[in-house]
Image 1: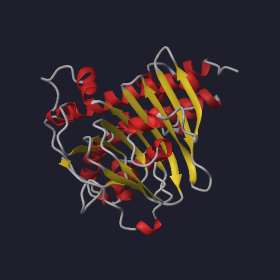
Image 2: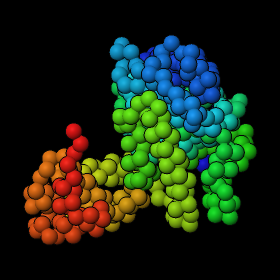
Image 3: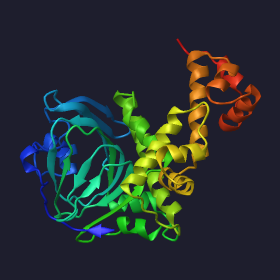
Image 4: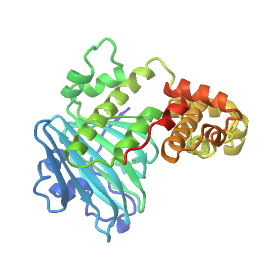
Length: 360
């Protein structure tokens, strides 16, 4: 679970740009995350500054220049307690940045991309799949991190002090898993980290934050709300793992599981059977069903049903489709069966959705 390291450079140094990532952009090479946030209001690259004085919120955006790539970094400081970094970008070339230890605990929610962190001299930690990476880097322990070229990075980093984690999220030491307690304790002299799969709920919350259309003070409040929800999801995921066996999956198995998930998102009518799904992705049925639950936090049936119900809701609310037409579009042979499933899922009848007219 733990490791220590000083700066380790990527192997292909000739192609790596040393311009850095957000710390270097905001505060200059070798500065900490706190330095970067302290410089938000002075950094020339910053645009779209926003403040919410009553809630103690400050936010800003840095957009990548076209010659470097496309996308942006979003930054939100929640009082002096929580630092939120939302990344949605792709650099044309690999980038490397020195990351000084700052004594903070980071909850990293990866949706997509390909980054590496120099956790050890022999084998860097490759962060390239949807996962939760909890990271504690003591002051004085420096590492480097770098991105792969053209990788679409979509992730969220929420950084807090260990004392804040203990005081606000771990109020009862009796029920706190030992693995999580280690991040709330005074930091040792080496890096602690733990990587876990993202639950379906956490994946959805992180995606909503990355895709947020809110801006200004309202956007700051929205970010604050979802950041707290993500922290709750992360802390809760440790509790749900207490006493449960830890499963490890190969890269091939993870690719197959994500392929199965994508198939369920695309194929709504009819929804594929587990047998057909397993055959299409090249996995045994038992491995698929157990792995899907372990990696995504819900069963294949639960995920498939959620996708179909959300699609049905969109068709009725935004396109005014009839109940009969929608039921067929999401794989139900009879509208009555669809109506029963929809009401069980959303707590209301399909006809009630169609009665609500969208605002002009």
